[in-house]
Length: 340
Ligand SMILES: C[S@@+](CC[C@H](N)C(=O)[O-])C[C@H]1O[C@@H](n2cnc3c(N)ncnc32)[C@H](O)[C@@H]1O
Image 1 (cartoon, rainbow, N blue to C red):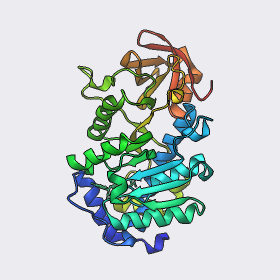
Image 2 (cartoon, rainbow, N blue to C red):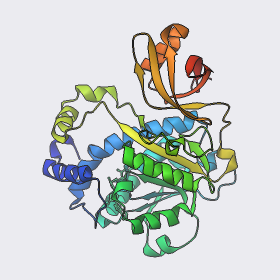
Image 3 (cartoon, protein in one colour):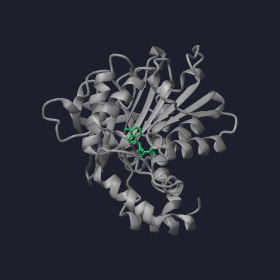
Image 4 (cartoon, protein in one colour):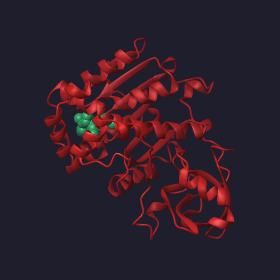
């Protein structure tokens, strides 16, 4: 699909569906062109979020189990609620197709399964690509690395129960969702529920209960922003899409969760903090919401305490994982995990 072939009415219809943010009684993809138009636009934006999630995983020292020299239980990847399959394609491209033997896709829309399987097979010709069968979904055998992307607000309880059953069969889970208050807190609740069975690789820098659920933190939610590629702002196709879809192309809020059953998957915590949302810059100081093993805290960095750090926080596109020097709620200095 190229921009001139986009099915705009289909994109308008999908937009209405996504805006409603509600559970779907059944599949809403009507033609393969729906999926191709989605893949080039909404799907590509989701791909940019995945790119940033994957950069963070690299920063945290996480790779799929087969790259760690650990005996792999599986070199398989499974994309549940795959849509056009952009999430699995991004994950496989990032780590390298040579690290996977098979990709299984599943969506309650057969059209989506067909599209995702074909797109993945075209992209990775040596990979064994298959659609999940009813018997595979009902089995209890391991499924490898489970990828889940932008499905949570569409799932009625029964579908979420099916997804939970697959999580129970996964070696690791990479899950990315929109960065809204509601969805992020839903994912956070799942994080706390799954923390007993898995190591939490990211975004958390600790294994405590999620502090978003502590009393007084109701207004907060765990979310981040991915940087879109700078060239899209000068691209008339993207500009037209942004206007027609009513989307601010600069803003890509997301939340995510990376879980692994393998103890070796846990990077050394070492007093790391994850900055939530955006850093706000004022003339004399910067303000940010910090999450670490002690909970959530609003911290201030006076510009004069560390001018280079103040500037770095304004400009960096790297995921904001830091080791601070602090005096209470004041940051006196700090180093990005990327630099250390
Ligand atoms: C917003 S799309 C996201 C697609 C893809 N994961 C991505 O990130 O681009 C949500 C997908 O979830 C699928 N879906 C919704 N409910 C489902 C269910 N009960 N079982 C399986 N897939 C479901 C939809 O058909 C759709 O393809």
